[in-house]
Length: 185
Image (cartoon, rainbow, N blue to C red; front, side, top):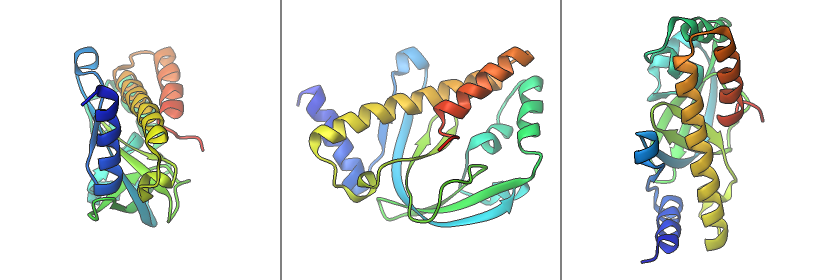
């Protein structure tokens, strides 16, 4: 099977049967990102201290539980100071249900999302066709490349934020996380 056809076949598998899609170049980044798709069935406002009840914790909440520098820790703590978080119940395309905690509030019931798992986890809105299995082969290939790139950029931005030492590094990496990890709708 040619590489392009293999990518398309695997992507369609992820759409239709709930497979995971592994993206990234392990040689260059040292890690890979798995992407799953699902539909949000429930959104619930919670206090950020309840995030540990979720199957996955993403966003700044997830980073707060990782190994981060003192400077990054204070930035993450500042962002979570409101204590507001959201718990999403998501039915994956495989039929399994998971819960995901994050401070992202713009995702609502019925949205199709990509669940990105790598060094950290991220929740990203994607076209409904990704959860319905209605993408054409050409569109599937284009979406796969776009999602792969976006997921890798998000992972790199979060890693840079977690390693930030100075205020300038924090500002730059925080901005990159906001953009790369879809904090703006």
